[in-house]
Length: 113
Length: 110
Image (cartoon, rainbow over all chains, first blue to last red; front, side, top):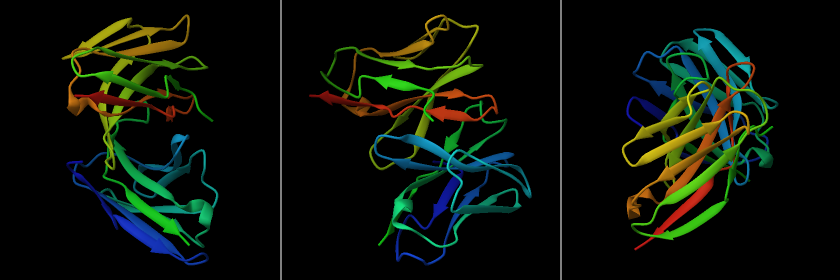
């Protein structure tokens, strides 16, 4: 987990409220990713970034938006949280594109009630 | 969509035994990676094997890749209690992003 932090680590929120998760890296890696992990599904890519202000959608992007205004920070926003977004969210970084080795943060456990 | 699928879903062995888990995938790849996840933690990269490689070693880990069968195996020799974790394979898709399997949960009994 060295060099990558996520905040908050745990959050409980109510349906319909906006939520922002933050990923911060000190490695100066170009690529950053947001995944969600649910039982039986492994990791699923939500959004990724290939540079400042450069982002793209992943497999499960509906209901999520991202922003990257600085190399070190990648924000994931749930505009209006739903119970189906209860999950563990992981941020990852890599030097090169997604096929390269990725380094993961410790995760954020989000519960939407 | 899941590219990689691990088998078995769960594996329980005695400490000191070898553990083998398998990964199958559907489309052609540039490389395949294995990661470990301890309970409640983020994933940790173990090994990357490229499509033109057949076998790779790292300490007690041995990974094989058979592109004709679209499958890979991860062997952990002389298992230890600290190897208890979930193990995931990941392959790159056409957009050079990683596609993940659902993982194998490995339990090492003392």
